[in-house]
Amino acid sequence: MKTNLTFCYDKLNPDNTGYPNLTRSGLTWKEWDFHWPKTVAIRLNNFFENNGYHYTEVSVDAAPVGSWYPVGISWFDFSCDYFALIPNDTLELIRSRKIKILFYYHEGDNPYRIDERLQTLCTEHTLPSDCYLFISANTAANNIKNFLYFSDHESFFASINRRQSSNLALNTEKIYDFTVLSRAHKWWRATCVFDLFRNHALENSIWSYHSDCDIGDDINDNPIDLSRIELPINDLQRFVGEGPYRYDLDSSRYNNHRFVDLNTINQSYFNLVIETHFDTDQSSGTFLTEKTFKPIKFGQPFIIIGPAHSLKLLRSLGYKTFDNVIDNSYDSVEDNTERWTKVRDTILKIKKENLKTLFDKCYEDIIYNQYHFTSRIKDNLDYIVNQINCRQ
Image (spheres, rainbow, N blue to C red):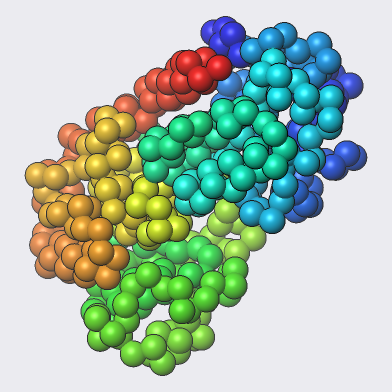
C-alpha cells in the first residue's frame, strides 16, 4: 500500500535510507537509545515495512514541499533544545513552511508539559507555532493542537511479536488463578503487588516482582496513599528488600517482546496487567503498552492495574472488556488510591469465584479480541497515515 508520505533526512545511509535525524553520527541502532539526545528511528517506519506500506525517504536538500522531517524520541529531555540541533539550512526550510517536523514518541509522559516546552522553543527560534506534529502514546495528546494520539504499543507488539503464534494459547488446562508479572521496580507497583500478596490474592498464581530492576523511582512519588489503604511503609520496604520474586523470565530476557513465555499465560485463568503508569504523569490521559496487548493476543481475560479509563480506551479501539463477567467500575475512578482499592476488591471478588466458570463466560470475547487484534494492524496504520496527511 502506498502512503504518499515523504520523510526527509539530513543524512542518508549508503542504501539511501534515512539516518535518524539529530542522532549522533557513527552509532549503530542498538546505541541510539543510550547516547544523548536519545533520538532514534521512528517506530512507525518499522510498522510500515512489516505490513507492506510504502513511503519515500529523501535527503533534506531533495525534499519536496510537504515532506516530513522525522525526529524519533526515546526519552523526552526537557533540558534539550531539539530545534538547536537541527542544521540551519534545514531549520530555514521548516521556518518557511516547506517541510514540517514529525516528532514521534512512544512513551506516556504528560504531553501538556511537552507542548509547553516546544512552544517556548518555537518562540526562541522564531519558528511557526505549528511547525511540528507531535505523535504521542498518551491519549491526552488529542486535546492539544499540533499533537496526535497513536496506539503505538498495539502496533509495536503486533509487529515485534508477529512470528509467535497465538493458536495454542487457549488449549492448555488452567491450573493457576492469575498471571501477575511486574518488571521494573516502581513504588506504586510494589504497593499493588504487596497489597495483593498480604490479602492472599496471589496464592495459586503465577506472579513476579523484579525489585532488583531499580530505575530510581522515588517512594515519595507513589500515587497511591499508603495511609488510606493501611499499608505501613516499613512493611512495603521490607517486601521490596526481600525480593526479587521471580516466576517468569530472568532479568536479561523479560524485555524481549519478540518472545512471550506462554507458560505464564496458558496455565492461568486471568491476567492482572500491571501497566507502565498508574496516573500518566498527572496528564489525565491514558497510556497502554504491550503489557495489555499480550493477554489480548494470547487469550486471557484481564484486569488492568493502570491509568483511569484504560478499559474505555480499549473499547474505543473495538476490544471487548468482559463487562458482563467482571466488575469494571474501577476504570472510571480518577482518584488513584480509590481506583486501586476498587481494583483490589474486584480481584479479591474474582478470587472467591469459580474461575473456570468465569473464564468460560469470557471465552467468546477472548476469541473476538484475538481476531480483532490481528485486524487492527491495518486499521491502526491506515488511521495514522490519514491523520498525518491531514496535518500537513
